[in-house]
Length: 334
Image (cartoon, rainbow, N blue to C red; front, side):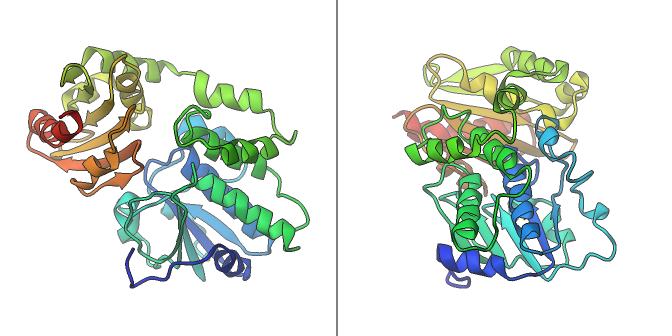
């Protein structure tokens, strides 16, 4: 971790958040359920403490997670912030490096003051609290809430906090199926199932419901799957022309990595897609075995968890991007 920024103890983090201040919460581009749930969960806590708070991101919340935040915010894009909202404090959640904020990093006029994250590999860009043992950033937000309750900062959990934080934890653990799930994860989730939301309906929306656009992407993934190293590496890849032909909005392409990961015998799954004419390929990775895919993504300036990570690759063609990934993946299959 960079000596330029201070590592915060948990109590120190909570006390800094207790200070009333107009606060902007930022989170990573193409936010998943953990990013959105953590951001809006923290917003609810800070507002309960009397801090005017807004959440902002370089892209809108995915339709799959919008039901949890739709009554709280119409848009998280920076251009939709109130003109008179000038933050006195900026906090980031679930964002391991400035690069993950995409164009937001350059568009914001305010530096991040506090970084809250759970990714073991990252690039501190503010005073930071990073708990690599947390299955989701939502677990940290839950713990902050408990600190506020136990120390008399708040008398009860804010409305919708349980839903938001449950969504954060459930999505980053694959509905508690991934190896990052711990006994403490289950205890936190159990405490959040307090009757304030319908968790069966929530799980259906998060994990079982599929739109027609998502089904199109899953079908395209299966048709464009490539296998290497005796089927241990699966790469689902789509070039820009294929993306155009599908006609599916960019937020629905999570199905690529899900399809690659689900194939029997696959130890490392990769999704590669070029979303514009620019020679830039978005890459998502998942590990079903011992491979640390954050190492793979770190080679290309990305990062994440050992079991789930992402990056962008600059390459002239899709084939060149795939060759780079295959070459860097050889070490996993010796």
